[in-house]
Image 1 (cartoon, rainbow, N blue to C red):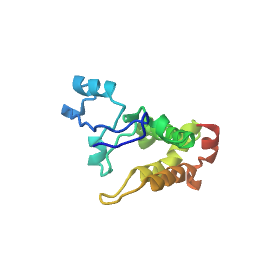
Image 2 (image 1 turned 135 degrees about the vertical axis):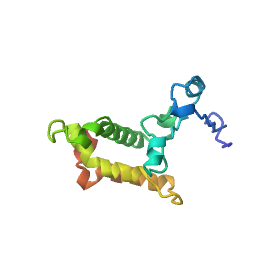
Image 3 (image 1 turned 180 degrees about the vertical axis):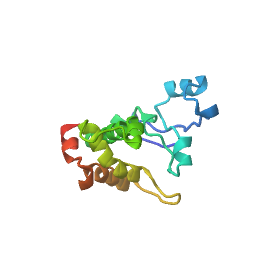
Image 4 (image 1 turned 90 degrees about the vertical axis):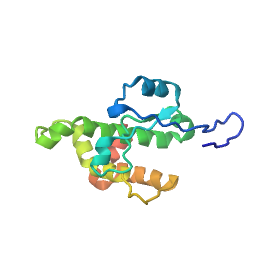
Length: 158
């Protein structure tokens, strides 16, 4: 894949696929590739098996060039999204078995309220396509949904 950009503006010169046995993120080849590439997208077998497509693990995926290619506001929204999503995922077992008591942690309460909107934003049907504007609008909508109680969170930086 080759994309052109103004001199000094950078370009995508290649897309590499590194498959690891048993989803081993510590595989030496995968580890070496992550170290030299500008970013990586990690696909999750667990997400795929649960019917979540695309099966991108946003907690394990990263882009080192994102701050240079998106607006500061978009970067802030993406970081908030990831923080809220990760808060839910890190506490998901406690939430699912009923061990988490509502009201004991404001951030977890907000993550629980927001999680359905965050999940909806991350999922697409197999033949559904979204352009940049649609994806950016969906990100903003997921963070500002009235049922998610997030406007205060977004304004305070979570």
